[in-house]
Each structure stands twice: as C-alpha cells, then as structure tokens.
Length: 191
Image (cartoon, rainbow, N blue to C red):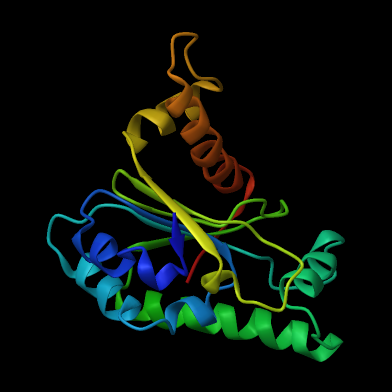
C-alpha cells in the first residue's frame, strides 16, 4: 500500500510498459499534471515495441444521470459551471496526449459510473478508491499488485474466471473485469 500515487513508483512502471497501459480514472487533467507522468507516458508510447494504450474517460456531457452526482462527490465544492470545466479540461488533456502520439491511443467514453480508479501497466495494477472527500484521489491510499493481466483479460472476454482460480487471481480479476467492461460497454472515441 502506498500513501499517495507519487509513492507508488508509477512513472517507472508507465515508462517501462511495453504491452499495455490502461487508464481508468474518470478525469485526467490533474493526473497528467503529476510530476514525471507526462514524460513517462511519452517514453512508453515512443518505444518501438509498445502495443496498447487505452483511456477510459467520462462522458463529455454532464446530463447523464449519474455523472453529475459522481463529479459533485469526487470534486466536492464544484459549481455547475465547474463540472463542465472539469470535463472539458480532462478531454483537452487527453486530446493533447493523443495529438503527440497519433493513432496510438484508444479512448473509450464510459456509460457506467466508475467504481474503482485504476492504472494498468503491463502486468502491474495500481488501484485506489473514490471517496466523498476534499482530499484528491492522488493523495489517497494506492495499492499495487503484479499479476498476469493478459490472462485476466482473457477471462473477462470469456465472461468468468475458471473455477480453480486462486483467491489473488479472483480479486485481481474484479479490477480488470471493471476496466474490460467499461471499454466493452463504452463508446469508442475517434480523435
């Protein structure tokens, strides 16, 4: 467990990723502004062997039932105009990253309320929790684990893990299944 995302060795994990990076954080403007992250993402995306970068984001329009509720609790104190600003700033941050790496990033606009913020870098999963707090998600507790993420995505495609899966694999599957489901059910964005 890490206190704050900055203590989780995330830039190193992202920079060294070669098979996959999946971001499921809802909003991204604050995330991309964290020290070292933009350079780490650029480093991964510029590697010749890098394969798969996916971002799961919130819908651009705040009139989607759960979205207003979600943003008011994840970003307490936001005025109605602040919600549109947060969504726009997040979308702009994603567009800027995608513009630096044309054709390399798949973006999915989720129609589902994000339940667990997570970052997948190859076979490492970083995850936390959303909360009703004025303290930023990135300053909260973060957990990380190493596991065969590719296998977990295979199980997600099959719909269920095998009966003989270990307790650790089942717990990790819940995380990966959340991301897989958000992408499968989401709207693919073309930038």
